[in-house]
View 1 (tube, one colour):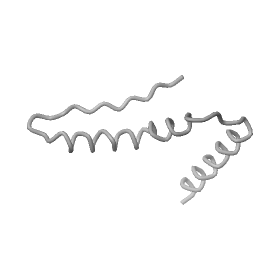
View 2 (tube, one colour; view 1 turned 90 degrees about the horizontal axis):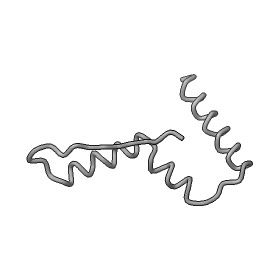
View 3 (cartoon, helix red, strand yellow; view 1 turned 60 degrees about the horizontal axis):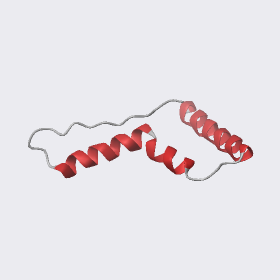
View 4 (cartoon, one colour; view 1 turned 180 degrees about the horizontal axis):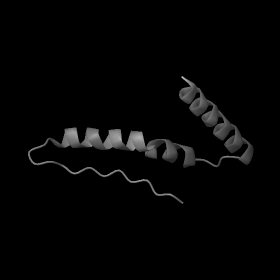
Length: 65
């Protein structure tokens, strides 16, 4: 299993709110939040296939533009 990591170093004299915002943005970009939401409940194999097919269609659509 591939482990996703989002780490942010707080810079000197940087407000914690700004560092937290950067951390949240990194989590969003790396897909950690989406992964957590997906794993909250069991996903039937048929639902998994449908989700993967939809993701593939979205990816294909983005690449064709």
